[in-house]
Amino acid sequence: MKDWLPDDHLVYFVMDVVEELNLSAIYQCYDSSKGGQPAFDPKMMVGLLFYAYCIGLPSSRKIEKATHEQVAFRILTADQHPDHDTVADFRKRHLKELSGLFVGMLRLCQEVGLVKLGHISLDGTKVKANASKHKAMSYGRMEKKAEELEAEVKRLLTEAQAVDDAEDIKYGKGKRGDELPDELRFKQDRLRKIKEAMESLEQQAEAEAKAKREEIQQKELSLQKEGKNRKGKKPKDPGDKPDSKAQRNFTDPESRIMKDGASKCFEQAYNCQVAVDEESQIIVATNVTQQANDKQQLEPLVEEIKKNADDKTPEKLSADNGYFSEPNVQYLEDERIDGYIATGRQKHGDVPEPAGRGRIAKEATTQERMARKLRTKKGRETYSKRKQIVEPVFGQIKESRGFRRFLLRGLENVSAEWDLICLTHNLLKLFRSGLMLKVA
Image (cartoon, rainbow, N blue to C red):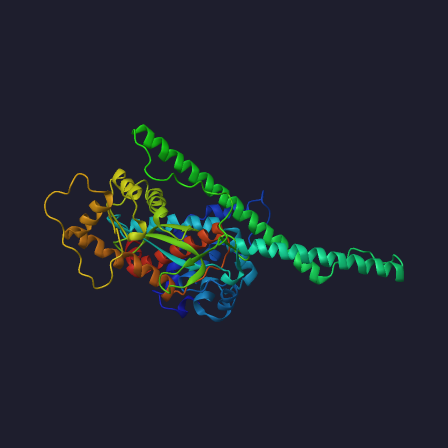
C-alpha cells in the first residue's frame, strides 16, 4: 500500500515522527497491573489521531470512515479499521499523555533549529465550547426559576398524592406507589441542576470576595508602612453573593460567555493562549483559561516557556494591549526579558506619535515608559512583527484546519485538546520545513 502515495506525503512523515516520540507513558497503561491489552497498537493510534488533527478531522466517526475510504488512513492503520468508539476511548483514556507529547514535539523542532527564543509573541483567541450559549442561565434568573420550580414540584407532588389516595380507595393498595409522573421527574431534575449551578456560582463568589478582601488589606498595610492615608472613600466590601448577571452553562459548566474579537459576538467559549516563536511560527507554550481578559496570562505563559525550554527565557517578548499591566512589565524586567507591550489600542491607519527627545522623566509611570519605548525606531520595528508572528497561527488553526469548536468539555479536557491541536500545528511546521528529513 505504501506505493499508493508519493514518498513525501504527510502521512509518512507523521509515522516517522511518532517513532521519535516517547510513548512509554501510554504503553504503561496496558501493563498487567491495570489489566487488558490494547485493541490496536498504541503507536498506530497516536499516529492516527495526529494525522487526523493535522488535516482537521478530529471527529472519531469521521476517522473511522476515513480508514475505509481514504488511502492515507489505510496506509497509516495498515488496513485496520478501529471503530469510532475505540478511537474516542483511546483519546479519552490517554488525553493527558497525548497532551504531554507537546513538549516532545517542541524538542524535535528545537533540534532542527526551528525554535530560537529570540522574539516570542503572545496572543489569545476565543474557541467555542462544546455547548450552546442558550443553555446558560444567569444567577438572578436561577433564583427566580428555582422558586417557580419548587412551587411547581410541590403542586405536582400534592396532585400525585391525591391521585394515589383516590386509586387506593378505588382499586386498593396494589400499586407500588413509587412511580413518578414524567413531568414531575423532569422538573425535579431541572431544579437539581439549577441548584447545583447556583451553589457553584456562590462558591466562586465567596472565593473571589475573599481574594478581594485580602488584596484590600494588603493595600491598606502597604499605605500604613509608607505613612500614607487613603484618599477618598474606602473601598466597598465585596459581597459574598454572586452578581445577578453571573452565568453558568448547564452543558459545559466550566465554559464562559466571552466576546469573540473577530466576530464581535458573544459565544460560549474558552480563552486559548499561545506563545509563538518568530523563527518559524512554532508554538512554544499554551494555556487555556476561563477568564476573557488576557492580563493574567502573561506570567503563566512565560513560566510555561521556561518549563518547556529547559529554563531558557526569550530575549524579546511582544504582546497587544490586552496583556499590559504594571506587574506584567515588572515581571518581564525581573526575568530580564526585553518586553514590548502595547499600552493602548491604535486604530488602523493612525499615524504613530513621534518618540520623545531626551531622557524620560524620573517620575514617569510604567505605562508612560512603555509607551515611549514603543515609539522609538527599535520599538516600532519590534512590535510591528507581533502580528506576523502570532496572528497567522490562529488563522492556520481556525481557517485552514477548521478548529473553531472543541470536541471535549471541561477545562482540563479542553486544555489537553488545545495542546493536541497546537502539537499538530508544530508537526505541520516541521513537515513543511523539510529540515527533519535532512537531519535523518
